[in-house]
Image (tube, rainbow, N blue to C red):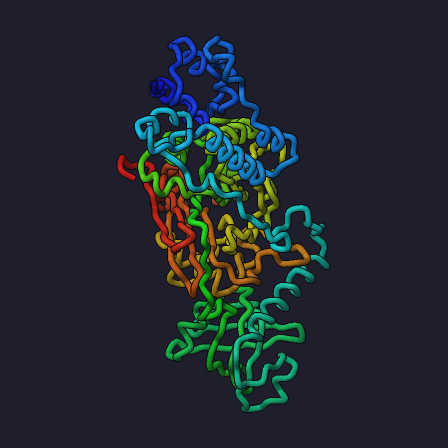
Length: 535
Ligand SMILES: [Fe+2]
Ligand SMILES: [Fe+2]
């Protein structure tokens, strides 16, 4: 007989899948159900359900409390979460074998009733069948590797590293021209050459021409663009600290520029695929602790992961949830912020976040990186969120960080620099985050203008995009966007914070409650709206 579990759902309880399967096959008394309803746990595990029933005298002796050895070993650090899942799967397969009756053609009518203990629940998540496949590229993540003390040497080393590594990318671009340095320009009079240099100044002259200063490790030079020139629109897109290849002839005073090339992504790249039909859900800017955090919609997203809100086909594939920063609203991030907080204690904000993570299914791997509202240093690159704040079982990464998920190279970055990119590159707007994301990829640098958002000058420039990502995941702008750029999928994962007064004043229109979900096998991207009745 099936137990009516709606009383647990109404009490806000979630059941682990095996616990739900177990209860579905049991007839339990109202007092046992009441005991479960009053449990302090948000997610009821199989062990807890069995313990609770045993305490109420409901569980017969013949069905002793099952010991989940894989879970125990995982808790003791003997098994990773993935290994624990594999162990659990093996155990479940074995259990099914034990309890399935032999199929007999002489007794066909017995099959349907006797195997009820192992009958499939309506929701059987495919993601539960797989161990997680994640690899963090440590050389792309500053966590534990910050050496900066803010000395002049640190600044010099930072800019040298950036110039050399962006220059190397530019040297892979094919050209018939000689690549020269600024101190060699006088040796090539009248000849078209290629110069690799950093933009150190950009100004409009009083008669509407564009004046650009360029520098490399040997010296400096300058170029001027008349508004009538063919290269003018391209030159207008140059921003300070850009490292570019300039094809030009040296004139008496200025370079006569024929073309400008940014490091950019290659035009052609092999597209990846995977056999596992799994999916990734991309989140950011949950702003837990803010009065405007849309907790109801976020809890609906969690229920969806459990297969309770429709689109179970897709929900069951979600193996990974990646959160790209601003997980909590923080304290003192801007003046008078306390008036807009529902949780005014930073530790309590992260406790609330931990509770939400713990309410997600145990087969989902949660990957978290910080943002400008979070409790780590404000300067980028940002290291992982500390243990004192985030205590739940998540994989922490810095911002930025490159992480391989099922073989797909994900570049995860909060996106704090996008404000300065939008302010400096003509034609960009807050309404189209994908435009600003494309411009940082074109520059192979996540924070191209130095200093407009705080940058810690590490000796290695972690903001540089050295390896080509398959997927770039950012947030910060609170507006969903997705586009493919030169074979790389750009995703801005929006927010779970409602529109703030600041956004109203600035005319920004966020898109709260929309979660992009990517099915890795066929690269299908869905955007589910958890604020609306129909997903
Ligand atoms: Fe945010
Ligand atoms: Fe942000």
